[in-house]
Image 1: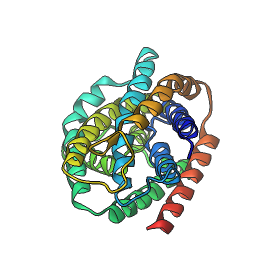
Image 2 (image 1 turned 90 degrees about the vertical axis):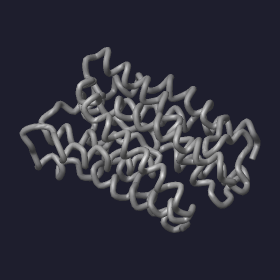
Image 3 (image 1 turned 180 degrees about the horizontal axis):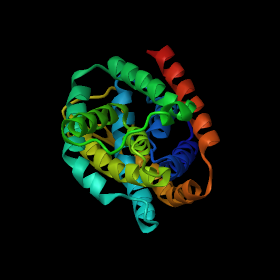
Length: 270
């Protein structure tokens, strides 16, 4: 593949990831991981273990994309700082546990985990009204919050995502406005992205990925990180504005269909 085309593809990936980060509260991992797998494989770097680099790089890109989105939401008053603080210990613990588990599984097993996880997440976007039927009086506290926060962090680290979807589900079911849920999910993405990326970086330093693309440090590819992050920083604020201005039910369904297709394709490759 021509290097210019590869860079343009990665930049386009970053643009879409940033937009989705602001619009849906997701960190962009659902876009970045499949796009990286496709781009690197097309460029001749689709060897055994490339899934680790795709997930590690995705987590690294989430740091900037979610930070940009979180700041924009904070300025608009739609980021619940107290929520992020109270959930932080459990999100951190879960993220680190997810990194450790990722280091223990094979590339095929991690690919299967990603495919199944993406398929499960697609249900929320395909059937948003089904989830909205359940209502709770308040946000989880105590052991419930600990278990849920740890689970969100662990699963997110394994999938290379920012944990936005379960946070949005939790907050909206507890009566919080969707815009506040999306803004707070972006803040959560910063935590998970940072800890997950550092974890994949450290773990990857002790492992060899056959056919890894140039510029890979640990399980993070620096050129891909720069190209994707640069564009996501530009487009994330536009996603935030759309989240405040649009009724996004139709967009959610299209995104859910995309996730389902990605899940099926990756399952066929495992």
